[in-house]
Image 1: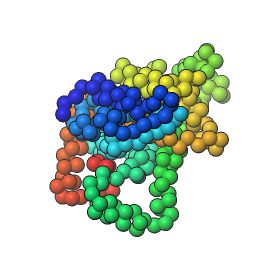
Image 2: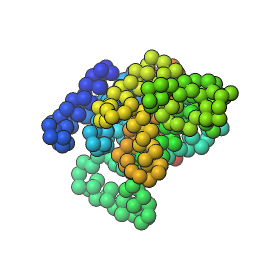
Image 3: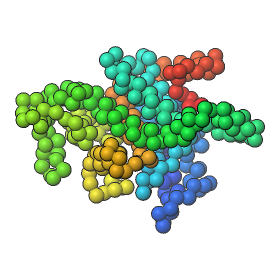
Image 4: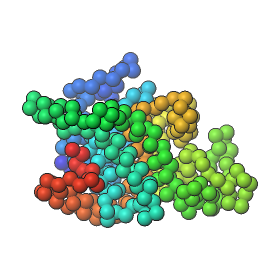
Length: 314
């Protein structure tokens, strides 16, 4: 099925309108499920770059709802598995040799996002087999698996920070040491200056908020900036008390210090990382997509799923 980026976003917006009730509740059923992307024969491996970014933006709205409620669907599993396959594909070379730890963190976040992915059950026999498999899991593995959303929520912050620093590498090192002077808006309405030759508190950038502002204000091209603007608009629709990047930073600090556990935000953090990763591959995406698809088809033909396989999600 051939759809435009706007049609993908419209389907996601229609789902949100159908699922969210006037009193603030959520009702999921035939009225809302008719707008799911997979149910409309939209396959993520068929999408071009613009369509894929539209799917990430649209499914972010579907994922995180008012009250920080989250609804994960097969659409999200398909999206996360395809994007992970592309970013981690051997010929993509997104991560440098010295970025092995970031790559492993990306892999772990992807696995956590897909931990609850199950092939849709068509009959009682399939349900019985799936139940038997789950009962054979080791005791601790089974209960750790149940908390995969919490794992993703906590690991999503260092992943987002690492991806941000990778994009900002001409300005900030992985250790946070400032290389090139830059300014970002301060929370009070002024500016905050970073300078490798400045005062001691200007030589180090340890703020995820400021890294996001650096990307948004100075490094993002028009396409990435548009995608980040959509992300910011969605966060503002959920909480307009502060700038969206300040809200993400607040989530991180409160989670880091154990004052609040935002178990529902992991997928949203992963989506933000994916937006930034994929925009670094925009010029190569069509070529990479074809190569990734060839690899996936070879795996399917030989009934082989390697430890590095992410797509399809089951």
